[in-house]
Length: 408
Length: 75
Image 1 (cartoon, rainbow over the protein chains, first blue to last red):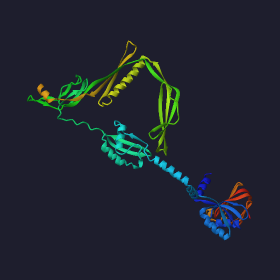
Image 2: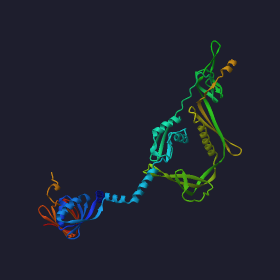
Image 3: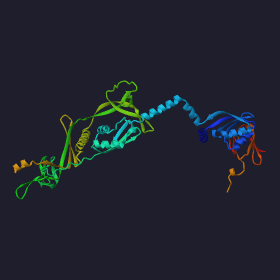
Image 4: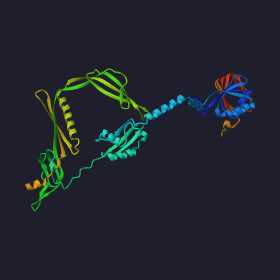
């Protein structure tokens, strides 16, 4: 089966004729064809002097020579070849025009950037980057064949200093933009700026390592926010005052707390199973409803949106897509929960809130977590979470030299 | 070492049931019609009789005949 399909393809590619040959001596004709190396097939003898054969186009001149010798003749009944069919197809002007038009449209549509995604940014927002890219000559919707990533990169780096590197990779009609954020340089301390090291928050000192200045606080001291830990003023042997830029590391135990009043009810949400779909077609920036659907009558619902893009060869995305909005009806129920559940839920929530508050400070280490709770008169429960941490509480506070001179 | 048949003059005939006959190394076609095909071989002639006999294809050395084969014999 496979062989016959391959044979047919082979014959179609090289082209063949179906001939009706009229010749006095059919047997001699077949012998001569074989002797001259012609490949003929589907030989069908119609009568004593007529036979129909199939023959490759390239062998026809040789057959003509044989027929000349045998005083025979032939009629071409059928021609099959890819060249012949293509030639006939090209004669159909409307078909060819339509084909070229369709090809141009597809080429045109797939020549534009339809979407762009940014990866690698953490603190710098996508909008900021897109806005700066637009000023540097790149935006979604532009023709992709005119994009020079190196030029855009150069212009972008000159105009936007929050990133240390950017690269645009065009994949079909999608642009993948990779960025690397610039690590800000630490502030240079002005050593001529005279200051004390003071406590940035209340705590108990566990370790103190002065680098410059006079140590005022000691291990075990309870300090309040603003207390001087390392002084920037010292008396010299000649009883004059010397000002310094006090500096050092002061590790102290600190506490962070959060509390709240919690009820014995929890709101549980259930899906009823009912849902409604709305269908839209997106053409460029426009979102148009495909089918008229009735308004959503659910009291409460969850919403999900799914966009399906059209693509060619999984890389080239067309600027047309479908959006399906699904609305799931939900009901909310108040559920009574026990004291223990209230306390544990509250503890987790408060702990998460505290951790979120301190997450930006990389110097803080959480040593322990303590929870207290108390049932109030109205039945609600008061929960307090206390985080015990260690951190560097040394902060710089400038000294006004003229004021201090008066003091001294 | 066996000499391949194609290099020698030996005719090889492959008969598939009563449906087809494949002949390698023939010299010429003596007779051809739907009931009888006679081929000239090196030493003898080969006669194939049947009904609806057709030459499916032929080349300079080989021929493939199909149809309803009644007999294949040497003359």
